[in-house]
Image 1 (cartoon, rainbow, N blue to C red):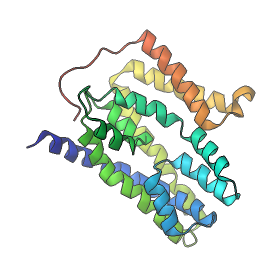
Image 2: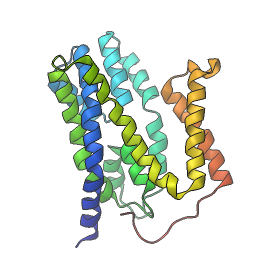
Image 3: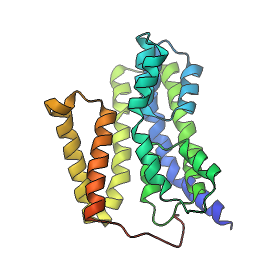
Amino acid sequence: MNQNRIYFIKGIKNGLPIALGYLAVSFTLGITARNAGMTAWQATLTSLACNASAGQYAGFTVIAAGGTYLEMAIMELVANLRYLLMSCSLSQKFSPTSKLRHRFFVGYAVTDEIFGVAVSAPGLLNPFYNYGMMLLAVPGWALGTFLGVVMGNVLPASVVSALSVGLYGMFLAIIIPPARKSRILAVLIVISMAASYLFSKLALTASISPGIRTIILTVVIAGIAAILFPVREEEGHHAA
């Protein structure tokens, strides 16, 4: 069987739970879009064009408040800055011979969950692995948004609120397996969680936007970890 096809099929298998989680989480996003006065198709198109929960929530908030295009641009820049770091990190997983078009298409859906799964795979990254995950995850996110707008006034508020818990379960499913294999990684995850909590409570940092706080913590913690615990360059097989 063609190697790209093997990676693509495995990406589909790993993308299924991501898609199911997205379906539930983006449901609440659809409700936010509806409250901002958007139609189901407008909200769905937004999810297809912008695969970012925080960015979309921020955008819908600006729309609801009647903000300007400039305010929207600044808000989206701040909310989505972390994806620049994630993309830079993920690019290091590609083979130097990988073509630009693959980097371009993979960059379309560098979400937290897809990034977490892709960057945790051993060896070099085959872009078709990401394509497989994207095939289910992206439509799942858009469909959940669509259903959220359509059914926003049908389900009880308590049920809608409970659906957001699915996102945290997805994060746990991503970080626990690699943490069990590496004690260093497990300690870094705990430190990151504790630092994130402290940053949200301390007077000096609580006023900073969550996106900027994430970038600061990522650069500082990842930088220190890279100096103290460097990872040797992996060669040979692609990630599967």
